[in-house]
Image (cartoon, rainbow, N blue to C red; front, side, top):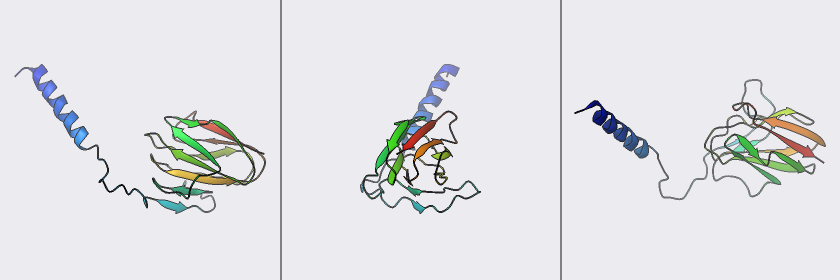
Length: 147
């Protein structure tokens, strides 16, 4: 057998293994109960702080403002909300991300690592501009303007 034929067979076999390991759901349709973590005051160990993190299929309805995390961007990148609004970031992409306060008024918050499908909520109260970023992806930033 030629080297080219052997290489093609190896690539085909690896492709089949990758497809087989792709997972999928068990058909039950139940994806709740994956993860819920109530997050307390900011910790110095890099653990999530200052908000609430939930897993796929969780959450008690719509937040005041929803921000999707797709690829390496927040959508919308800039949002304006009223004081007392709960903001929910949901990782709708395929990569892990964080939502970490970088500047502005109010308590610090850090989602910790959000895997695809996970969400993080923070209620913002103090007026001003809050900058936040992803600590995993340099340049991935967003802004909340609280009125």
